[in-house]
Amino acid sequence: MRRRGFTLIEAIIAVVVLALLVPTSVAMMADAASSRAQSLAITRATWLAAAVMEQIIADVNSDEVTLGFGALESPETYLETPLTGLYARMEPVASFYEELGIEYEVSIGELVSADGTVSGDADENVYRYVQVEVTWRDRRSGTERVLPLGCLLTDLTP
Image (cartoon, rainbow, N blue to C red; front, side, top):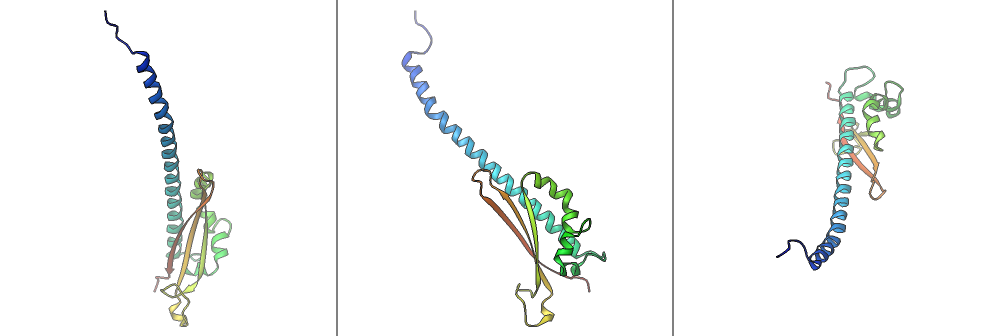
């Protein structure tokens, strides 16, 4: 009568093969999870940067007295005024990202020409370079990551 089952040699070979494959597979899965988390953080940072930049563009094109392109002349007032400044108005959106360790900062440059440099002709200096810089800490390496998004803005009203 022949028994069905594994021999001792077959069982040992199976254990050795599993012992070699499982740690490698686990390491690959951990690396994939880390890469996925990093991709998600970059995506979230991009969403935040785009949301802030879209709000700034909307403000520049606004007819409201306290907004418009002229509001960028005083970056501190435009950004930090309680209740009406950009940071205060973006709080409902930004708070979600801040809970995830993602923060942003806006910088508004001086008047420049279309090529981004200050021209000797004041009539050519009708643009401002606005940059949204989003930062977060990479969970895998612990290093700070930065995503800059910049745009030249001007007054389109005649």
